[in-house]
Image 1 (cartoon, one colour):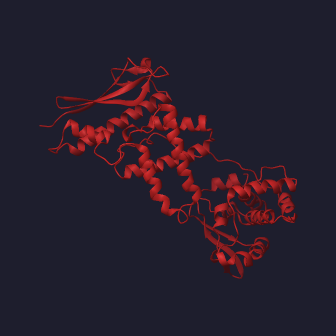
Image 2: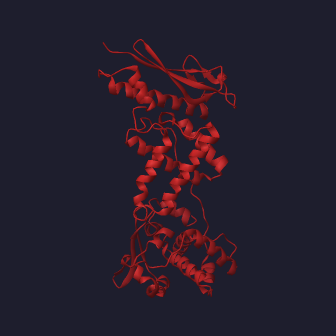
Image 3: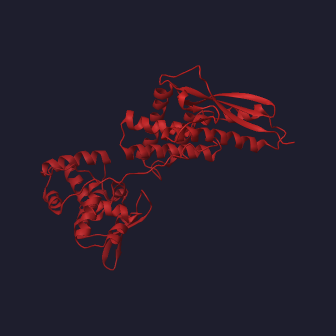
Length: 382
């Protein structure tokens, strides 16, 4: 005879947090036995809770998020039940131990995050930049700080990591950390990568991001006019670091390469096709082909640093993007350019100048290594 299994939720009405909300409690039934699983760490206003449906009332964003988190917990418990349904091991204690994680190496999230960071350490300098690696450590610290600020806890159980927690973390990043939309989205994507790492290892049975859409907003970073580019080109700097940064920036203005692709550029990526020299490479960010014919100006810049840097294999003696952007601000001041000059502005300048010279949008998109022509339209001020 099949054993019945049921999951239910109720509000602990005799307790309220600082926001005046009560915790949603979880219990399950197997056959004639019942087990309390404690707080779900989900808090709801009593007036907005339905005892009949065991859900939050309404269709607000908060209600949808809370109810999605409740559904995720139910799904996790049902998956555990079905896994052991026909097994002689099936018991209410077994379901509880699997759900709470007491049968696993990991029961909370931050140690899993640490394990993921350890797993990608060996990729640094190969398939992963130091900057990307550092960003995961920053997100890990952000999440730990968030748990302390929001829940007054040092960690969170794997089963407690629900869509409501993700939503709270997003709000924390925007309101407390103060990140703009795209920075917040990048951090949430990093968190999702770690969550997927845990899910692929069956450490987490549900998807906290199932109802959370992550998207970037296209940002217009500005561009330089042809006159402004010429003004920088003609300016000679006695300070060697400024002269280097100027030349690398101008190189990008005439090739459209992003900072990381200039940083990684090696001589084997420069090939001769029908007596013309080309850059044949792939974008580090997307692995999309990026093929650009080298005009006289970028070729002259390459030759300028050939004897200095050829032993290292890389075309240019690069420095960090942060330092380059700092020096570009000096260069802008010295050249009388009243714009917030950054290295990435060179790609926008390349796109805009190419379109203005009659190069087809599709060709510019391919040269920039874009995956979507809409992005090129933003770059080219269309």
